[in-house]
Length: 241
Image 1: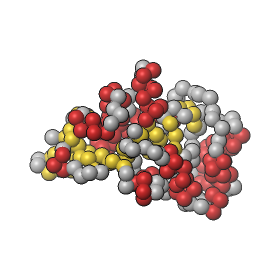
Image 2: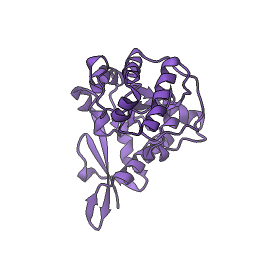
Image 3: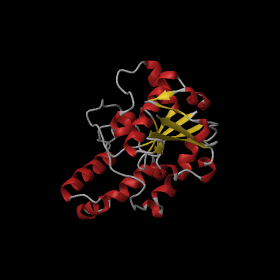
Image 4: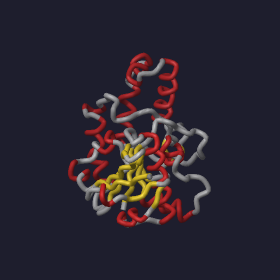
């Protein structure tokens, strides 16, 4: 069983530092494409000021030079979903569960185990970069598929941006979770609350050591519980009353 979550823009560089892993050839290719930009071009590419682009340029240079500080992916990414995952003071058993079952999808490193060491960076699949003449999605598609090859159970907590990197054959095997709130008899989806709920689901799965996705249906996650009457075969609905 694999649980897929997306990377995040927000980063926590106060996380613990770990040993770096060798960069893959695809990661190097992407970094070289970014390095080829002038500072002005980099600022335009990212849609940020030249001052902030200089920080990104220094990050790119440090990564290529092998001098970048690296942090566990699960602890470096710090968006709302990540802050809703219990990450501190975990037991060895809990960390082992996350390392075995949780995969983090990124545009720079590909698909990562939870505690893989990575450096701070800014990149997503919406950015129009074509390293080696390929879009980022095309570049990573094979690696993304290989990361879950042979897995009978795949739970996607991904946004469409990351999910679309996988081939159609893999996407058709994924189970997705939809979190809805009952507001005065009307079921609504709230982006912020859904992000928090996804993080809470990762925590609940870790605590309960879920290895069969059917067992999710008996969990209550941040006040959300499974509704069979609203669910489909590959889209499970959890409602907060």
